[in-house]
Length: 145
Image 1 (cartoon, helix red, strand yellow):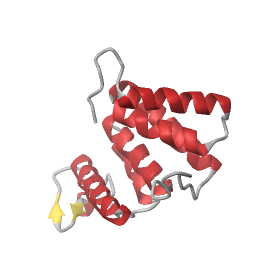
Image 2 (tube, rainbow, N blue to C red):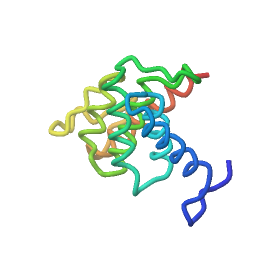
Image 3 (tube, rainbow, N blue to C red):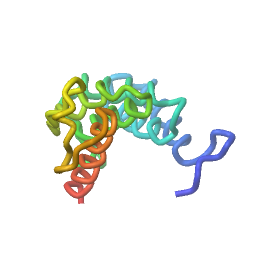
Image 4 (tube, helix red, strand yellow):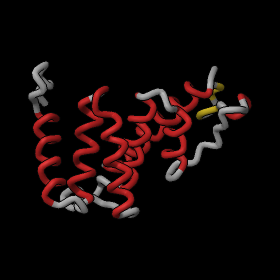
């Protein structure tokens, strides 16, 4: 996939614009919101809040969401988008809340004894959340294949 241009052009920017048009025409279309959430996550820093808002809005419309054209792109994907965007914003507790809906972790910010992911003791709550997110991403990608 070609890289995004410094001028805001590129496939992700084009996808975000197309999904924005679709969401404007049909605000209750979860596919438009979900697609835009993914594009916004990919666009990076300036779009994380929008990615979170779109993922939440799509899930509010359809908690059992599955993308019409790619059924493997589901509510789980939206929760992962939400979690990734929240981690990027530094909100590890909210990221974990999004993840724990579908992949419970038992991580507790106030209890270092819980900061264990796949048998590895993490140095901080934040690194434990990152390790859990990476594990979930790897598991989910395998499940999609």
